[in-house]
Length: 184
Picture (cartoon, rainbow, N blue to C red):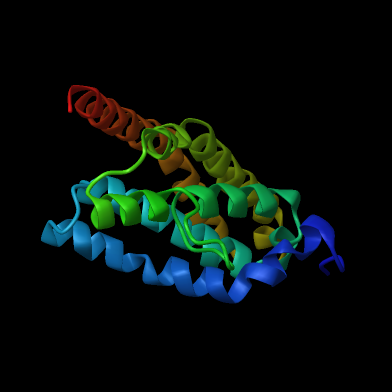
């Protein structure tokens, strides 16, 4: 049972918009397939699939994970950098793109935040995801959900090559954008 406040109450506070936003994020895969965004399909799919799995298979279906402190670090890292969670609209990403599209540029400090915040927030998010998966795994066995336990074990193995792949992609993208900004 979730606490009345503190980290134990975070999931209950963000559950409806979290489920909605993370499910809707599947559209990002389509955007990548259609070429509407520059992100490669493989990187987009890996990120969205991981978030969907943590959102639905871990947080929504297993109450044991819902009150863990890692939910707080997960929601903070996701909401600051990438996704809509609760009332927190992509604190860095949306203002950056909004200003760039509206005025044709974004302030250098916002560009710097956009392409540097992930250096810390992405590992925090990934470690939170993996940590919550480990928190939830014992209850999968005790509740007789062996299929979920086996699937989760396989998915955990995907984090080993998946995280470095996505992180290297983002570092390369960061380098390209920040170098272009210095030239312009």
